[in-house]
Image (cartoon, rainbow, N blue to C red; front, side):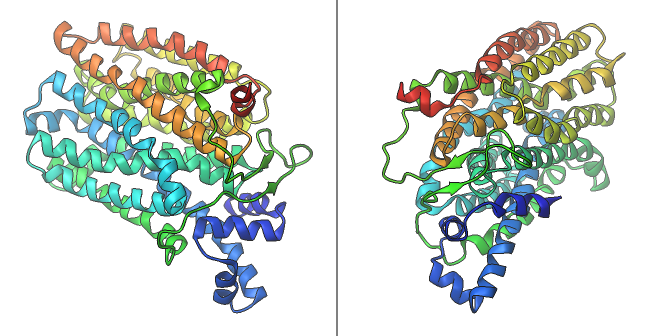
Amino acid sequence: MMDLMVNEGTGTVASAKTDRDTNAITGTSATTATSAGGGTGKGTATRAWVPRLVAVGIVLSALNLRPAITSLGALLEEVRDGLGMSGSLAGVLTSVPPLCFAVFGVMAPRLARRFGPAAVVCAGMVAITAGLLVRPYAGSTVGFVAASALALMGIAVSNVLMPVIVKRWFPDRVGSMTGLYSMALALGTSTAAAVTVPMTKALGGSWQTGLAVWAGLAAAAVLPWLPLVRGRGAMTAPEPASVSVPVSGAGSERGAGSVTGEPHRPALRITRSRTAWALAVFFGLQATAAYITMGWMAQIFRDAGVPASTAGLLLAVTMVMGVPLAFVIPRLATRLPHQGPIVLVLGACGLAGYAGLYLAPAGGAWAWAVLLGVANCAFPLALTMVGMRARTGVGVAQLSAFAQSTGYLISIPGPLLVGVLYQHSGGWGLPIALMAALMVPQMAVGVLAGRDRTVEDEAAR
């Protein structure tokens, strides 16, 4: 399947333009590519495997974009006890991911122009590896948060650049590749939630070891990007001059179009676009729900009398729902003129899950975990809409950075407020009511963001 998508994503692009696209990301010149290949035939063979390597890099990187968070959620009680944190301070800890994503994510487009998207993602995977390896042994809350921030910085820049890499390398398969990336992300998220507690017990019961082991997966994700950035140095990654792809007919997907590089064009005034703002708020509210879920849901079940290992599995069920749906939803979204109906269905599942969590958290735990897992698939939908609401690679990069950075800023208070409400009310009634209330505006702005228009057109007006 991966080979098929790679071939489809590159087969309709003219050879010379594909060369420029490849060279823009790898940082090699046409002469270097031909020389390395030993001739035209070998150069063509080299170009054939590079997109496959990009696809492998996308999948491995996506696997590492959430274990830093969900592994902590599964062991939050042990970490709180080990570091002497209060409930409010734990709420601050669960707010660190969106804060880092907002602060560091906005830097991603500039870094990508300076060093190239592949080099920045590679550096991001290195940062994740270092942060996950150091934080369990930092010895204090401040050190733990600082090391977490290092890992989250790597996650932040990769979050923003993944849609850019997908749009550049697979312009007529935005839905399929976004689905593949989102599916891998959900798999990494759910796996960390499910196996962290039992793996910690198997490794001797130390929460430090249980958290540090995820650094190994991040280290593996560095490898596919190394050939793409080797010898690149400080070269920039210019936008491809022109990549034309079919927008209709067999095999095409909605959201594909032309990716036109305009390196000398002034920056898009993204804040003039209502769709960009709607997408940013939608992204922020779905991120609020996701980080509250990842940070607190296992604790909600544990406080309701569910054993710790079962609570971890319930969180894993919530996360694993994104594995199949993260592949289906982007493909469906790219075939619809308006993504509003998908937004409403996901929101309704979220409201039903919160209602069940409020009324019978232990009795219907598995059902609520499934419903909230479906609701969390607003994330791959938001990523898909980023690729659909802009016509150009430059536009996608700016929209991705704006929507994610602004969205993560919006999401910062949510997990913190849940921790404060939990500590001061002594229960989960008020926090769950807050989660349900936030779902209503999420549905409203999601419908606005799903309208068939582009940010370039709105900004120009």
